[in-house]
Image (cartoon, rainbow, N blue to C red; front, side):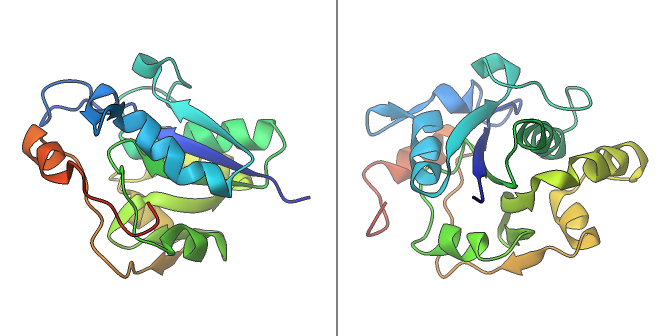
Length: 178
């Protein structure tokens, strides 16, 4: 059986937002729960990456941006017998219809407009740790290209919550099946 782990990356600094984005509420629920709801139909279980939210710590250490969170998710997935990991940011409460399904058709694959949303073989964890230590920058997109990940272009914009105004603009907004 092919097991897929879902991982919500919630360890960012939220500097533009001014407080912890994962705990911010949209339509009566926090952003962390909106993101887990996006993953739940597609994965066997879900973990949160981000120590402030009581989740897994970034690897190999804190302060590395999303790649540190993805590395932690891949390590956890590989250690616990998952074939792949589907990652999403806690600041992505809505995802266009069909995008996650398109990502799941191939691993590695990532959303071209929001590369933190990706489908990664768990076995790539050690390779990612090496990349983090040696690469001149920590761009998720650059790492994805270096491993031959397929960029998936979404059919619609992906709302991202970076500021309180971004969050306010999303109130009540959904894609058809979100």
